[in-house]
Image (cartoon, rainbow, N blue to C red; front, side, top):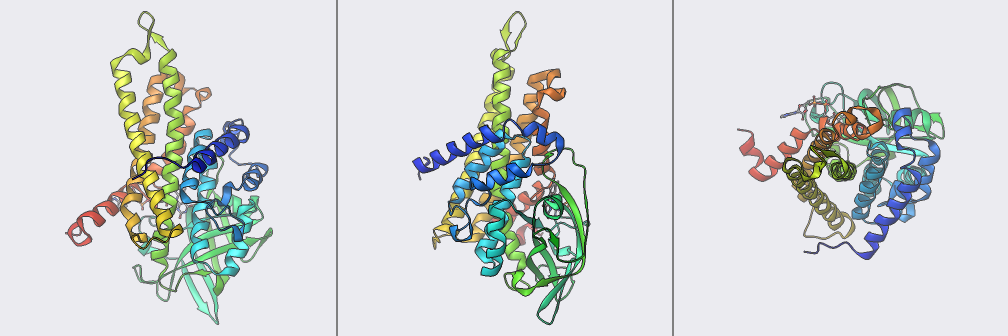
Length: 409
Ligand SMILES: Cc1cc2nc3c(=O)[nH]c(=O)nc-3n(C[C@H](O)[C@H](O)[C@H](O)COP(=O)(O)OP(=O)(O)OC[C@H]3O[C@@H](n4cnc5c(N)ncnc54)[C@H](O)[C@@H]3O)c2cc1C
């Protein structure tokens, strides 16, 4: 076991941190308030290679490790604790990674170079109004006719709706649909690289709207509805009826990056809190940090943060073993528990850190100028469900550890 990052990884983290300090830190509050990441910043991140770190160089990516991707997301979230930018970047690294692994050459050539330059957004469209946790129950349907697909359905709480349909040149989502029959279950799920808009033009009928969110202001979340939207068969990713397994792989990849975003943001919050308790003096000039009730709590939270970090790095290391090194000792299912541990732990820890730091800051934390609440609201998106609810992580851990049959009763 080796607990050291390579010199290359250390330098990469440092260079992302310097980039974020220069281009993101001065703008994150304004971005959070205005609710949009300016296109020039997206393009700048593209120029810097941040949008497709683990994607093959052949398709415009950096061809770097997943571990480096995790380090980049952590640094971006540290410099934009409201996490809109980190989430924009993590979605565009995570789901295109799946495209890089499993889509046809034509699709990779269309999607990945454009994502890499910040011209396309590419995320995930799975959730429907009757319950995001229950993928087996989705109702979006892909009908095959004469070698072409026609997709009908409505997706909700989808990140990137404004980016794809209004702001950028286009893009889309790894879209999850039923094919063959609409029966409840996993065996009739087929997945697509669904690109509704290309070079500023819609390729079919789409109705969409964008929600007003309580946090993570720069990245949109919306809903879209399509009816008989034509999709060429080459945009199908994976075999017909086998999409569920690809979706689970995609979630495992993206959830590690989610954990990294939570950790980066929480690290910022804890540092803000420590700075405050070192300087705030109460009860005849004593530093807040000198009270046992405060520094004990710091140690508990720091321990939890470090444990979430280790879970996250271990999962990233395993992703590299599986997909980069093609190590025969590991397969995608081995990721289930390590990823669920990271995705379960990181938002919980981050949220506890924010809550405690806000208590340390007292009334000031309740004032908008303190900024801490912005990070707390950003992190909350992952506590309430984005990229999979916390209970779903617990189900995965119990199912794979205790055994599927034993937890079913
Ligand atoms: C900001 C934000 C962005 C999002 N972006 C996207 C996106 O880009 N693409 C996308 O597809 N979706 C996205 N989502 C949706 C997200 O994936 C869903 O919120 C998530 O899957 C949970 O679905 P739900 O909200 O419908 O809750 P439900 O599925 O209704 O679940 C409600 C609660 O019940 C719990 N629960 C569910 N099943 C069980 C069970 N068997 N046992 C115990 N507890 C259970 C869940 O953990 C959750 O706490 C986003 C959500 C948010 C908040």
